[in-house]
Image (cartoon, rainbow, N blue to C red; front, side, top):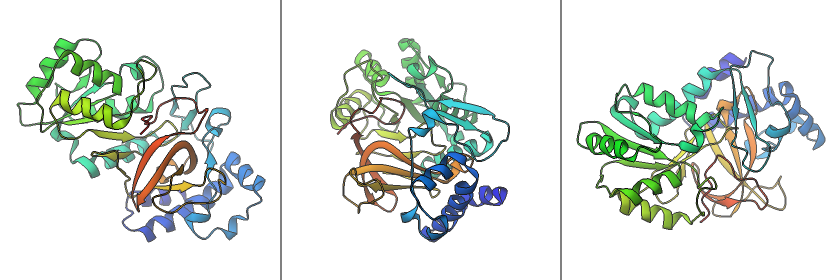
Length: 327
């Protein structure tokens, strides 16, 4: 059964396809993921009564800190760890790295086209300083898949980074500069660019290196510094195997195997309509081997079937690896 479901995930085309697959995965995980099954029983929910994705219970993301979330006893191929700034790290036990690779490769291609068309420059120093980052795993693979000798990770060597950026902006490859907010700010404070056709993508906040700022202010500084009209963003986290992307203005889009729902902050089992601010629930069907239904600590609102905004985080949530910009 699980093999058939895994093969179905990335062929989803319609909302009906998504719901059909999501419900199959829910029933599979409700029986095979011990932690999720216990959570459902605690809520006194009858699995057979769930006939729509809007009735599925979402596992609080904090469980990834205290429990092993898994649907099988297969060999663990990788343990992804959150940054865990100021607290305990989340752990995502991945038993099928090929599924993660298929998810982020398909997602990137869906939103941005062939990876081989890009020069990818990554400014992710805080991630490179620790082990177990799912973001580093993804970006490293995309860099290799770009088959471009100029693609790579860059730390403090601003002169070399500037030289590569200027060179890459003049060849026939598309240029993607991806980094944490403070690293992108550090770069444009030392050197101004005119990269009107480049993609500048921020993926997370200041990681304690700088004072957090609102998205509009950050993006304006980066637009001015890089000479672009919009700043792109990536929304992902340790507990997920899929990503959503924003091509500007903080509006994220999900791939066909990922969906966002918004819950009432006072009643976690009540969902809110589009345009209302609440807690972000994520359905990530690529998480078939852990849990696909996660209640995050992010605040936001859904704008349409596959678009949403992130507006901040719940009070007292630890700062870590997803998009942390507060609007």
